[in-house]
Image (cartoon, rainbow, N blue to C red; front, side, top):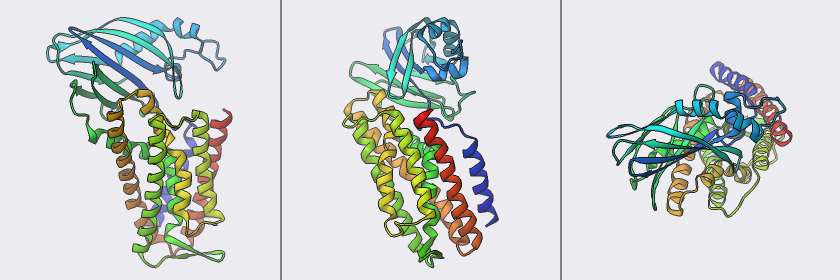
Length: 368
């Protein structure tokens, strides 16, 4: 019980300290197009990330103008060149002719577009090493695509895996996409709080105005399985619709709605109205969460076949990540469910903390 309370307290301190950052992770997009000994490199980096790392907003008015961006071109080139290394079997590629080509609009804002020419000794597989921005944002990642005609290879590089050898036409790493789904849950703090709010009352049953402990662990796991599966199903539906371009919603609306769904889930624990139908609430509220990762897939511009396999792998990873959380949380909660401390401090107190944090996120995302 003491361990559970300590864990909850640490979680509360962590999420209160976190900035109300967008649900969509900090991404960069690298497209490599080999042509003989020269590989053309297009690198899209979020202007907000460059500003955070390099301080581009010279007049500190909260906006990075194109003039401020171009004035900082030498610093941008220096920083990006230091964060990227390419090599082939013949040796290290030389990055040359850096050009700040302009600004592109992605689903979550403005991106600076950089071009490099990489002079590579030899052809064939190309190894990409990426460590840009990891010192200031460990969650940052690069979505790398190597293209040659209709053939392509795609991989996601992050701090935990900064290097990968990519071969044109090679089979995409399904396991890597699954891992991204797992990390999406584990590092998506609004996802985690949403899931926690749904799971906290799972070991209890509401009788009148009182919470009573459930008697059978099997019964608890069945209820939790329905909640988690309903959430994943809803997440998968909207993720697929958005990634396939069938439904598009503004990023600000999506992020605000995700925060609002966390508030609703937490308040439901304080004044329960859907005790037997919480899986339905998880499904309805989970629909909005599917748009969180879809913008990354849409911005990547994958072909239909590649997109579908990525969707399957990512959703599988989401389910695995959720089940891992469940396997840790539920046994501890079940062992502590009979105590007043769990019912009053963990369930009620924890739900209040979650609601307060999510309310802060909502106002900063909706009006910030």
